[in-house]
Amino acid sequence: MDFAQFKATYHICLDPQQEAAVQTAEGPVLLLAVPGSGKTTVLVTRLGYLCQVRGIPPQQILTMTYTVAAARDMKARYTTLFGQESGEQLAFHTINAVCSRIIRYYERAFGRTAFRLLEEGGQKNALLGELYKAQTGEFATEGTLKSLQSTMTYVKNQMVTGEELEAIEVEGMKFAPFFQAYSQALVQRRQMDYDDQMVYALKILRQYPEVLHAIRKRYRYFCVDEAQDTSKIQHIIIRLLAGEEGNLFMVGDEDQSIYGFRAAYPQALTDFEQVYPQAKVLYMEHNYRSTKQIVAAADQFIQHNRNRHPKHMTATRGSGPELRAIPVYDRQSQYRYLCKVAADCPVETAVLYRDNDSALPLIDQLNRAGIPYRCRQVDSTFSPTGWCGT
Picture 1: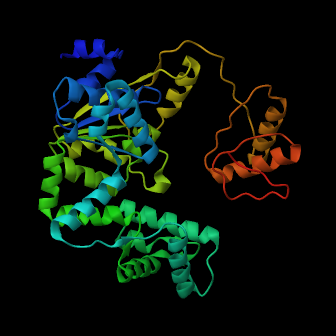
Picture 2: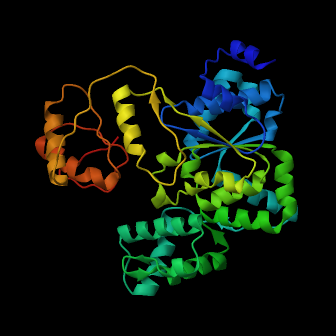
Picture 3: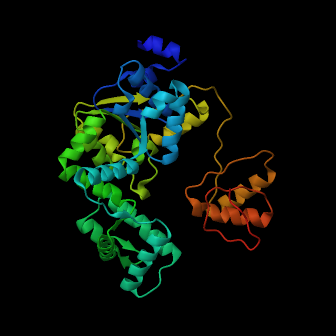
């Protein structure tokens, strides 16, 4: 089956940039995909192309995604397009899940037992609270525990050490001694936390080349989705698995990186050609989602980003309503404006906000005004009348 037959058989319609990405199969490849450019469609179609046209056994392909939900969605889309049998043979995993499998392989290969995984939530909070009280003499609040956990995740994912680690403080407390005490406590209990799976997997790959060789023998093609949200340690693990000249297909967009506080490492995209000297860099710059006015304004704003690949986003859809700038002078003015719009809004309308805490003042005003609303994933709220986020 050639590419033309492949498209006809599976009713595939792609633009020239998408077709180029699907057919680039060998060596390290970075695909820079702007918002709404169909990157998941291309990823799924490329997997089908590798199996159906290039004849690559699906068992030799490993696709890594940012979340469990994304992995499930990608597998479902592939199965719908190319069939259940082939879909069941392909591996779709988060990078953390891949690290867990590396640890399990190490256990089987060397007859050893790895540390038990520390239960996230109650068990971990109890340990953090215990160590915090030992260091400060005070009980940790829920907010303090949350800050300690997020800092722990950041440090491990960004591989922070030395003076940079010594400089970190959490609510006025030096973090380095706490981090050391936490690490020692886990070793004494023969436990590891969720992020430690990556730390130990990396150690295994570096110290036991036979494990790395076994994985490379099993998987010959590696695909990575949402690469701009992948952390520094994850990129290093991916580099080891694929090798500098391996078949690595990485999809992302440094302009869309918003998870720096979770240790996202978009620099890996801007440094891709230095890390992989033989790399090909491809672009998907057509936005199929939004109107020309929205895309043009977004692209003009994005061009102010620094440390990026030169690319532009263009719209394929027609024109829509003109954009309006609404001047507000502080956050309270913004919330009052949004509340007024909500009171007069005849249709269901969405409000986007930076994080959960940003929604709380608006929720308070909506409650006071008796305006109905739905809010997703906000957990730190309190209302005397009660409410339920959905």
